[in-house]
Image 1 (cartoon, rainbow, N blue to C red):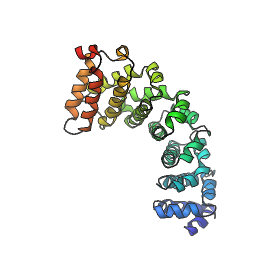
Image 2: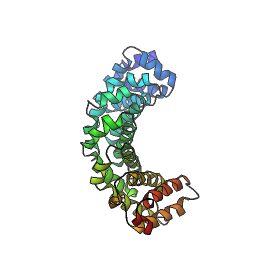
Image 3: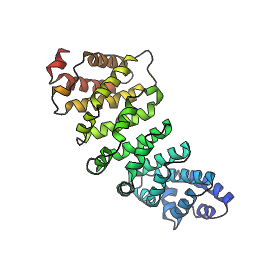
Image 4: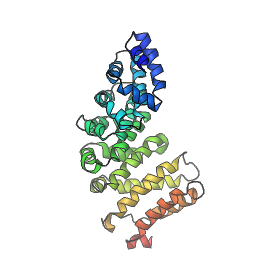
Length: 305
C-alpha cells in the first residue's frame, strides 16, 4: 500500500498506472483501512482528483468510489475532506464523471453521520436540486440514489426533509416518477422510493398533497396497470412496489374521504396488478392488499366502487 502511495506522488505516467493499481487494491477491505491510515494518503488522492488531466482525475474518482464502498465508518470519515469537491464536480463534467461522484456521495452518506452533517451546510440539497434538471438518465438515477440514502437517515425528518421541501426537488421527483417509465425506469424507481421515505416521515404529506401527489400517483398506477401484460417494461414490479406504498401511506393519513380516490378504475388496476404479479412477484400482493384496505376501509365511496 505504501508503494502504491509513493507511485501516486511521482510523474503523470506513473500516477495513472499507480491509480489504476490502487483502484483494484481498494476493492479489499483491509487495503482500504490501511490506505486511509497512511499519512497524506487522502490528501494525495484529492490532489489527483482535482487534477487538470482528465484521465488522472477519472482514475482518482474511481479510487474514491472504491473507498466509499467500505462498511467501516472510519474509512468514510477519512473521506470527509473530499465531500466539497464531490459536490463541486456535479456540474460541468462528463456524464460518467458526474455519475461516479453521485454514487460516491451516496455510499459515503450511508456509512457516516459525520459525512451527512458536513454535506448539509456545504449545500448538498441546492446542488442536487440543480442536478435534477439534467437530461441524462444516468445522472438522474445516481441523484435518486443519493437522495434515497439521505432520506433514510435517522435525522432525515428533522434536518434533511425541511431543507428538501424548501427546494424544487419534490415537484421534480414527482414529475420524474410519473413520467413514462420506459424513458427512465431506474430513475423513476429511485425517486419513487424517495417519495415513500418522505411520506413515511409524516412531516411532509401536506406539502406533497398540495403538489398533487395523490392524483398524479393514481394516474401513474392506472397507466402501469393498463400496460399489463401486453407492453410492460422489464422490472415494472420495482416501480409498482414503491408507488403502491406511497398511495397506501397517503391514504392512511387522517385526511378524510375528500382526498381519497373515488374511482373504480383504481380498484380494477389493483386487480390487474394482483393477477399479473401473483406468480412471479408475490411481494406485490401484500402491497396491493394494503392499498385496497386503505382505499376501501373507511370511505363509503371506496366501498361502493
